[in-house]
Figure 1 (spheres, rainbow, N blue to C red):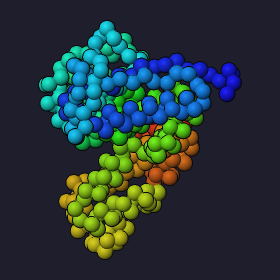
Figure 2: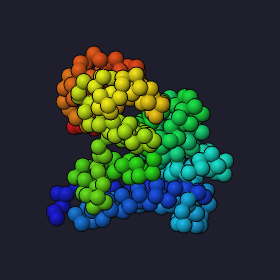
Figure 3: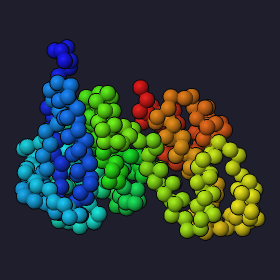
Length: 332
């Protein structure tokens, strides 16, 4: 391998844990950075990540499983890494009470750091420290409404896998921390390296879809009545069809009135609301990952016209599809 190859700097990474942290949220990104180092070494490239486990004290820190991690560094505003990842916890309220030092550290560190990330419910540490005020952020879909209500100054996006706002990153639940870590790797070392790491870990470099696959799709899986659940899955596979009430009712051999009543009872929303939400989330995914014209995306997702799609985007997130793509597209 010749000297013409680009040589990268070594970046320091603190994975910040505390008693009761989610083990997988720490180990997942740790392995992403570890595989990146291995990939770089195989190419005779300098650089990579120097990862340490950090906490409010040194020593073994118990997780939410049988696993403990050895914290070798105490978090300090005078010893900031290039990148810090604060992991989440199943009982985030208790974690906030037990580790207020992390909130204070985040408040002080945020303006000075290259990248500060919160994984899953770790976003509550940033929120409590005021770091997320005025920003778009995400967390585990189960905790999104709690984050929104407790910290109204945050623009909570319950569907995103991860979000970057300047130097502040937040991710969705548990394994989404690996998506975020891969995005950091791609930013630092390029798509080719990140893609190789993703292949080694047998995960997507860019997962198809956002948390919508867990919000719309999982909410459909949690519907008690199998026939309604199957219909929801069918709807998501036929978004470009004309999905009117008579057609859906006939699909289940129900009267239109009984179908609408049963659907609402099982899902707490009307068929029209479910269809609109499913189409909206499908359109968001295409806007993020696909360079097709807006009219093509509107047709593919069943909105029929750009204007109808625009109205739904304005209603749900307050921006047009064009602006959404400009802000969040991952296409080159």
